[in-house]
Image 1 (spheres, helix red, strand yellow):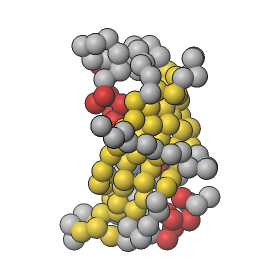
Image 2 (cartoon, one colour):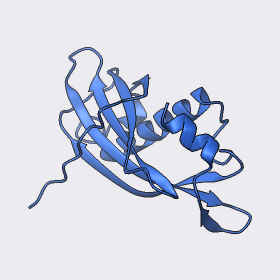
Image 3 (cartoon, one colour):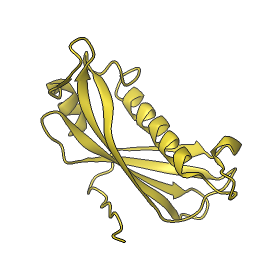
Image 4 (cartoon, one colour):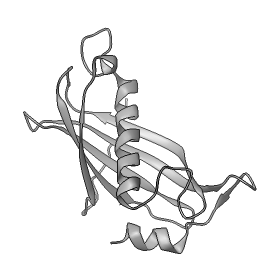
Length: 142
């Protein structure tokens, strides 16, 4: 079976730490695969807030929607661990970009996961994909 490989971009532009809660643990006693995506969502929202956007529905008059995801698991993580999420962008295009995440255990420094969410801009009034606003593109390249 071919494995997904996610390369980290040269520049990571945001970092935040998230605690693993008991609700993030699965029946095997470690971080669940569904929880990793929820934690990445929280990291993405924190990044947007750091840019001055209140949430994903208010980014320069448009919304951001997730078009695809990929996750590569590298190590286990457990309740009480703190994961440092580092974010960077790749495959920037007319309508969106890939947001790349690296999740590292803050204590052991082991890489727990790499993720990608392909996001596109969406106009909720017309219900259509929209071009990336120039103001946002400028912040993305800073």
